Length: 105
Image: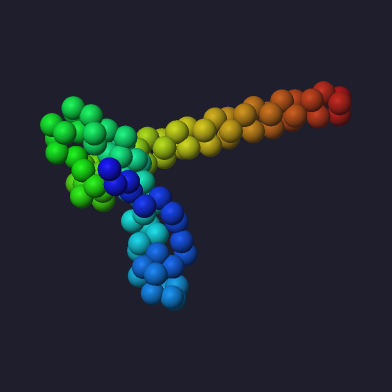
């Protein structure tokens, strides 16, 4: 049973230099990580065997679809978290403004 290569390196293509092609490989590695992780976890199950998931599926359409959904979900969570922080900041600013006005009277 072979596993996805999980080691991350600056020189992803191992040519001895850090170049623009390494940047593409780094993006590819990070983007497909959620989908490849799911494939690695389910490829030996009945579900994985039915859909013919294997090591050759890493970075493929199924992995890309799962990864896209995972990153979309992560982005939505981050967006809502930042919006929540902004609401807290606005509420605190409003509260602070009222307290300052009370002291000025």
